[in-house]
Image 1 (cartoon, rainbow, N blue to C red):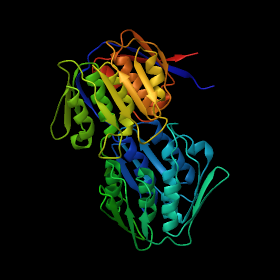
Image 2: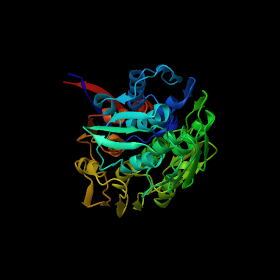
Image 3: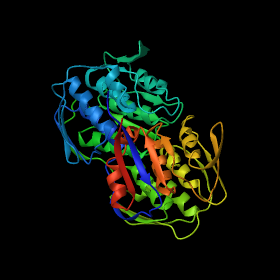
Image 4: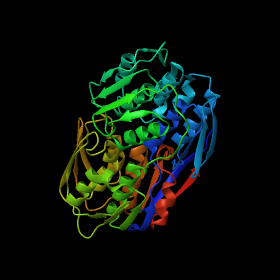
Length: 422
């Protein structure tokens, strides 16, 4: 049996100093499959050393691609030897983003069989819009026996109208359309920074993608895509988590290597709480001088408040003066972590997709269990705030999306460690 671990945090230390953000998880899990579209090797830098990246390396190798990966340095992907178009259940279940192999393999070889993806259980995440997009390009698509199967004799550019904004659907159609014959226009496209980064990576290979970052993206398919060297953007959600942790511990932290314009929705809410936030070209400073005020938050697609930061933010709000209201519009099961934070003394009431958080003077350390990636981040924030020791069980969820998070927090003065348990 695999070893079980727990994370131990002794709270009460104000975080102080400087820390550097890792490369973006959400960009990495799109760019790595995109390298399969190239007709030459690609080298990708600034990838985070996280479980989702390791899982994708294993999947690409199983498809036959040659992958050289040196964590924290570079990854070189030679897709030319790849002959398989099938990703099985044991591989796909390791990460949600395994479904990007559908668009990448469809674009590469005209067909793909990928098992239904795994990842965190945070609510319904249907892929019907993805399949609708593939069908608009001329592919047949169906779910059968736990496998998602898409195939096309020839992919042809077309207009794709999404019924709702979908990050995954936008990325998957971009991948397939990069090799389709003719021009594809995606309407109601998602605007997230990692979609812009994927477009930049595709363009660096010779693709013709315009409009990324707006709600209309145009892709002119190319028969041949050359190799490229590319560095992914910094992680928006890690940046936000570190900002929240600095505020939660009433510290003074400078976060370097980030993109401040990606953080505007979070920065606005921290300023509303009375927290000091300042930024320069690639750094953000967060410090607390007085009491925190309660605020209301409603998650939205970018550039609104990110659903991925809702959970860490909810921990910060547990000790803010007054009552905060969080409305989760993206995922219906993204409040599971609040049951754990209640064990630490928080006063929280949840009705459907709305959480009402009444500020308390202090949280107290308790044994808690991680239920998903960002829930783990929320429990870390709560543990850093709490009096006494917080034991976080199943921290492997956190490893899916945060690179060396304990080391980074320890460098800022946190008392945090991990140990193996029987």
